[in-house]
Length: 167
Image (cartoon, rainbow, N blue to C red; front, side, top):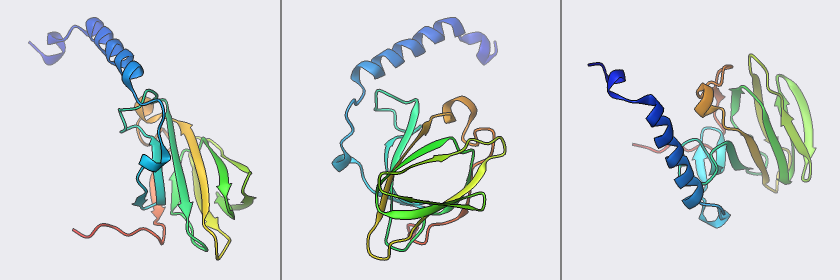
C-alpha cells in the first residue's frame, strides 16, 4: 500500500482545519516590539513580526518586519517578486528599484511593484548621523507558491552591516 493510500485526505482537511482553529484561538495576538530580537542578516538589521516560519501567531497570511539602516549605510540588494508596502517610520533616504531612484523620508510610503519577472531593489540611508527605520508588509505567498513566488528570490549583494556568524 502506498503512502498516499494510507491517508484519508478528506479527513486530513478537517485535521488541518482544527489545527488552524486552535492556532487562531491560542496564537499570539499582540507582538510586542521589545520582545522581538534584532536580527543581523544579509539584508541588514531586521525585526520579524510575522514570517512563514513563525507558527505561534494567530495570523500567518502576512510577512511583516521592521528594518533599520545605520547612518550612511544601505540594505542588501535583492531580486524579489515585489508586492511589498513599506512605511518609513524614521529618517530619510532613497530606494533603487530596477535602476530608478525614489527618494523618501519619515511619513512616506513606498510600494514595491509586483512584477512577473521580479524586481531588483536596494534601500539607502542618506543621513550620515541618524538611522532609518521602516516597516514592511507583504502577503505570505510563500505557503502558496514557494519562496521564489514565481519570480525568483536571490540576494544579489549583502548589506555592509551584515556580520555572518563565525563557525
